[in-house]
Image 1 (tube, one colour):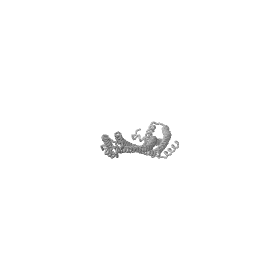
Image 2 (cartoon, helix red, strand yellow):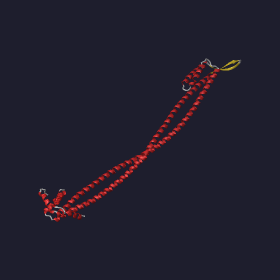
Image 3 (cartoon, one colour):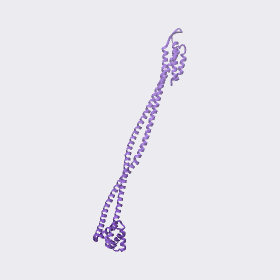
Image 4 (cartoon, rainbow, N blue to C red):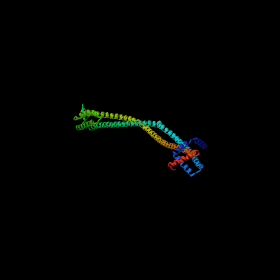
Length: 383
């Protein structure tokens, strides 16, 4: 290959005119490397070195350029092959990382996030349900407490009525005085209440009337006690009247006791209904609380999965950024090396061409070259 190049150059050189030789010498001398090379040749010519040695030196220099270029070509191929391997590795890793990223995003957007939204709605609904049941229970308990207080007030009022009626009746019975009278020649027993005891009974009835009128639920007996007060205001209560008064007290006591029994029966029914309603509400509340706890537990577990997946996605994005940056750095390094190689090759090719052209000049136009170098020196451009 080298021999072929030299033959081509020699053919080209030997076909040139002297003017063309001079132009070629000026072109070479205009380059830094060519000027240095001409300086070296001039020194050798002035020293009287043999022409063969000069040519050998130029051929050795040319051979060195060929060898260096061959080494650079091999080194560049090895370096660019390594670049291709590295870039392929980064591309593969980026493809895997992007595949993982797509998987994480699909899992979040297509599964975990929708499930979390559903569970959040379910938890909110169950909380509202629990709150509703608890409110119903609280209202039911409040109503029961009010009903119980009302019932206890009714019982207390009934007991007051029974107590005053019983006391009045017993007061009459314990203070009745028996007397004997002749009627149609027959001796009969007659019951009377003395004036003192009548006054005592009247006082008791008036006090009972006052107590009854202060109750909330027994005020209907107020007029009866008022009537009794009028009856007992007589100076003396005798047998027939006493029987009617005692009978009236007995009927009133029986009536109040029946009313109290009815109230107790009604209270028992209310308590039974309350207990049944509260049992059903508490059972529903417990079921709702259990469902809420399960939903919250499931939501907590799902949030852990989301956190882990989001963390994996963040780590993958960081890995993608790092791989992308490292790939770009490696790509830039390889491109810069390729450019440096091309620049170096171009510079070496230029210098080698100068050497080849100079060999041609030495072989074909040595006198012209010597004259041009002598003229350059004479012009004051010392070597």
